[in-house]
Length: 373
Image 1 (cartoon, rainbow, N blue to C red):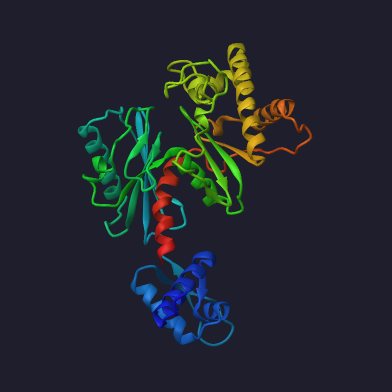
Image 2: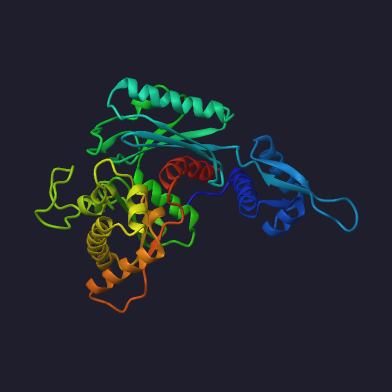
């Protein structure tokens, strides 16, 4: 272990003060000194440095019974902005998050996917317009995460398995060549799981099921998503649910994807809203379809739970349409299949369903920024 230098100590104090303000949001110089057991001159020096860097600002004064009121310091939440872009077959969704992960701008564009240069240039144009219209400067933008329905390299520079839209082998340069910011690809289900972890700091071990047009999954162990040896850990969508069953886009048959995704539930050109409106209004055909869907989903969830023995979180586009009654019905079916029928409930809804994918893509850059301070 090397010797700790004066520079290391200064950097540590700088980081400690910023992180304390990040957690408590508003503090005086004296409160910072007291909580971190630092001298006032040290705190003052670091506050000046943080203020010069544009990371904090004076945010008014604290009330005082006697003497001069203490100056309050607070974060500049938009000192760094992460951009997340969700690429879907017929649309793209772009949003921005600040350093607390709060959404501070969102747009959706209808755009049919094409694997050509003109398409990627068009996406980059929409992103640039979004950033400009939101009033963000180039300096504020930490980077752009592009969430895709496919597996990516660990560094996010290439899609290594993207059969849903046929972009296997696509390199990030197809997009980054038109944008003056750091860019990377991220697996959409892993993005959704990252958002869940951000919102639930108490979450340690879980299986995250992202139920969208296509199914996706993520395994969370020790508060981290586990990617596995070849970066496809959590790809539950391609676990065989029914041998010899429906044909999957991966080329195999009977995958969970073909029985537990939104596409597996809906008729062609039917929306989730249309299906669930019919279901809630007692439409018999929808009830039959949903019963069959829950039966298949319960088998899948039971298999996953037998392996991991942890919570299963349901997220993705379908989650906002599901009710507590639906969850109770799913629990009942899983318990009937389980070898351990007396277990407590372990299936829960995601706390951030609708925007979890693009938020998670944006958070990748926010987390990296915060770790560097």
